[in-house]
Length: 512
View 1: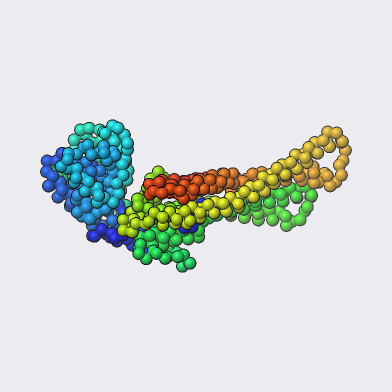
View 2: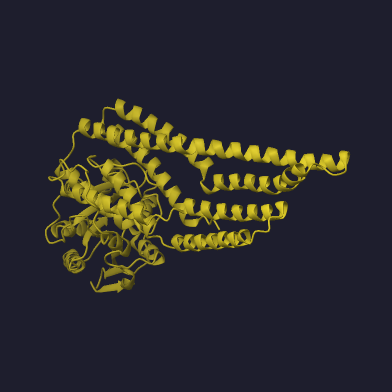
């Protein structure tokens, strides 16, 4: 399904490819002990390990961790000193988390949090150990490599380092273990780390979009948004060019089989002996088989679906560009190719927001006009196309079914009451041809409704129109960034849910 249109990198790291290619980001998550025997030694080894990761010129590494006392703070300071982007996951809201620190340490924690690229709270759980366990597991879920400062001993409490390392191993994550006592470094499963994710690399290799009339006014000063816009255009064009048109091809296949059956009914009913008709039926069957083979082969090619998903995800990112805080819209969606793309869009948008914050009124006006109004027009247009087709097919189904019932009933009544020979035209058309062909046409109408998914689409278009209308009214009324962010998040998740629903239907539904 196609929805309607429309900072500086830390020193020492690879810059964005620019043009129409998105940078690739990898994340090193962290877990470690609070109490350390040799903080200076651990800091030195942390610096060496992180510096070695950053030697790869194809990706930019980001750091992800909580900021508990001890190893977490050493990791955060080291990452920032190496000018890595650092994201923070807090196990508890700040007032609750503050209780884990004394008055001397907390100002340093606040200073570090101020330098983070992104801070989020994982849970509101009252049980602190449960919250720390959730925080550690979420770190594993969102990293490509887990770095652990661990003494090899069992966890001393729920959510301890040993439990997080065990979870990373269970999830088959690459792990780097720094022994907290000997400072030796051990790598596990590093063969699973695929630098330059293949899905992202494939999308970056797409040919540039054909030049058009798209406006680029105001984009020169925001290289991140210009890059995402160019990437979106080429992904959108690639998806449009590569779309296999499943519904049209399936409709053609069904239509050819109906035509063959109708030809057979004509030959049997009217006794036509023309040698052309059987060969015409053979040609129809061969054509139907050929279309089915093409459909099968095209179904196995998923590049165009990846391009369509990438186009709609970047469209959503562009629509929300300018929010002070990037919305993590894709965390709840499971797709193997999303994470690198999501991460790249998040980082570029977050850095752009820090460098060039948009005004509230400017962003709201652009979002309402370009995004919500555009989507409302799109769904209204799609519904206007689907509803008449559904009505025509329903009418045709009931008409052919009724005529088939009348023809069959007439034949039964004639045989039961009248007896004898009926007029020749009645024998031919009503008693022979109609009972054979009319049920077939009725079934064809039902098949077309199913092939084109008309019931679901009409209902979905109407539902999306109502939801977006409500979002538009709310967006026009709100006066604060927090309220506007909630409206935008609700609208974008509804739109992306429609895209992922389409992806599931297209990927896994067989039509023949």
